[in-house]
Length: 255
Ligand code: G
Ligand code: G
Ligand code: MN
Ligand code: NA
Image (cartoon, rainbow, N blue to C red; front, side, top):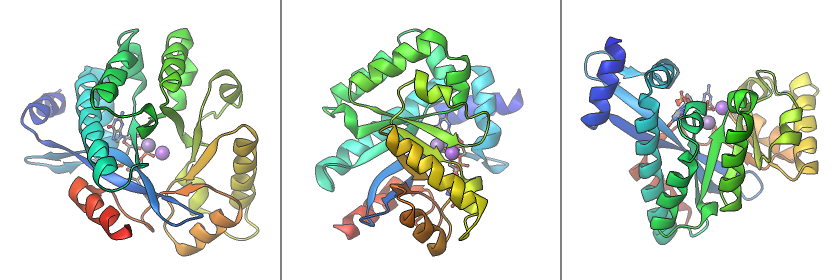
């Protein structure tokens, strides 16, 4: 309870920050998008990991305000980057299932913000988890469809862990799979992880989806992923999550 009060105060007092982790095109080697990740620096405890405070935000309902705040920052930042640095740059934002369930028309707010910023829908990608698809029902499905019609892409986060029911891929329209880092961590020539990643990539491509590998930490992992046709990579090997200004500098350097 105390933490949720502190979180509420942090949101009001600009104690939260959005950082961005670059996502790299594995064929061309350039940063083509970035994932927005929220950070909380607690006045006494120091940094609190999202794995700790996101669940608190979800159960207290604060995730709605936090989510809107993160989204607003991300939209402003991607608008600037597209205008000044790379007209094709995309931003990827995590959405909690709670954000879809709070009201039937939640997605219309997100679309309005994008339109008001003068951005096309394809500047934005939303990362959802299978939890949404599991309990989502018609409402979540309709919101996802409306978002995709407006040009946004939908990425399924942490793919391969959890239940990963393939029926989700049949029932929902998903643009992108994010292979969970537990597979990437185990990548070696001849490994099960490599066979699994190859199979996931083949399946995704057959279904018209792209694939992002998460948690890429070494050049070897990057090379193995590229050799099996993985589209995009994200991880400490390329870059850690960083403040907007630092990402801007990286984008400027890559020209
Ligand atoms: O950054 P890592 O920093 O530890 O993030 C851990 C997890 O926290 C992410 O995988 C993501 O699922 C969640 N997360 C980070 N930022 C956000 C956010 O803005 N909204 C939601 N719903 N989850 C987030
Ligand atoms: O859950 P979600 O996948 O959205 O969040 C990404 C999380 O993964 C962030 O917390 C980020 O800090 C973390 N992360 C990003 N790259 C790496 C990596 O290469 N290795 C590890 N161990 N964690 C990473
Ligand atoms: Mn994510
Ligand atoms: Na993930």
